[in-house]
Image (tube, rainbow, N blue to C red; front, side, top):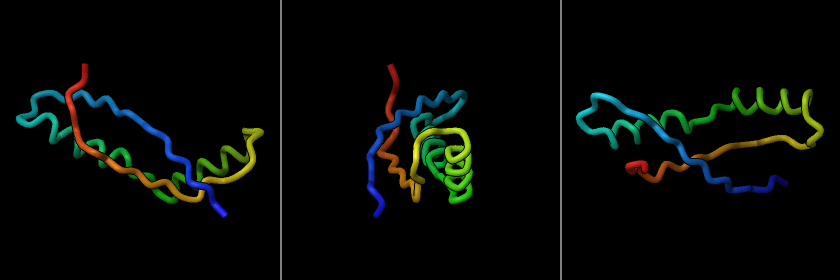
Length: 71
């Protein structure tokens, strides 16, 4: 049975010449947060060959909450 682990990730996205920078950054974050089954399979294979860790990643789900201004 798979265990679900929640890991927080922050994306800092620089935008230029955008009339609505936060909207553009949000669309970029949604795009970059998508993980395909092929990427998961590739990660598992590299992890199997090069890591002492055992186990596989079965799925990755991402949630993009919104865009905000950085510091």
